[in-house]
Image (cartoon, rainbow, N blue to C red; front, side, top):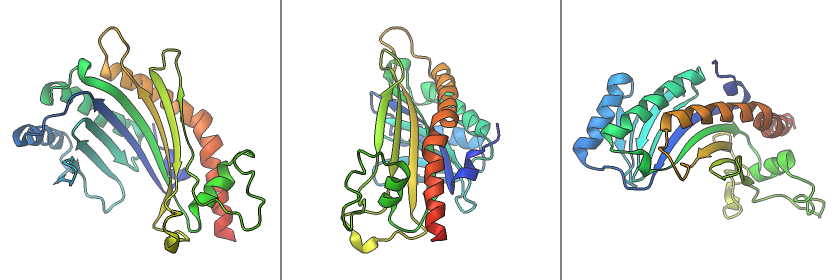
Length: 251
């Protein structure tokens, strides 16, 4: 399926994360063997780095603005593509990682704490990001102070988690984050290299009985996340943000 989301934002991300109960392997040979197998599948992924928090990451060159990445943290494996041309490319890479981690990193179904599928969007805009978010998404209850003299939203990053099933094992999280800060007023207003970020995650926890099927769960979560993005997230969050940002640019 073609990626229509990139036309709605400045940068689009589709990520998958496997969160584990136990620490993942950190021995050099195991880590390198894992990433070498990924590079064999995706030869353009040639930038390998170890970051300060002992996170290892293999990624493509970022200069084009479109690149693959896979990361290995102490208790999390991540995979995604930034600005993918098609969603199917991301899903294919994620499935490959899910197939690798049981025998290359020793991640069994018992070790999985949760599995996340995350859609993320960046919207670049000058001005005070919290005020933009408040104008686009604020309810009358939260905006009750907005009519006060000189009142402006300076810390407005809404977030909500909802259970999608009766057993609470399938959850969705929406958050919108500002890059300007009440604690650093000298950086206001935001410059064009700073973005408002929207995150939408569908998370699945293993059920209490039976074997957790990572690939099966991933497929279901992708379908659910795509449906909710189209039916709920885009019309109720993305479009209002786009409209307010467009108005700010005109004025």
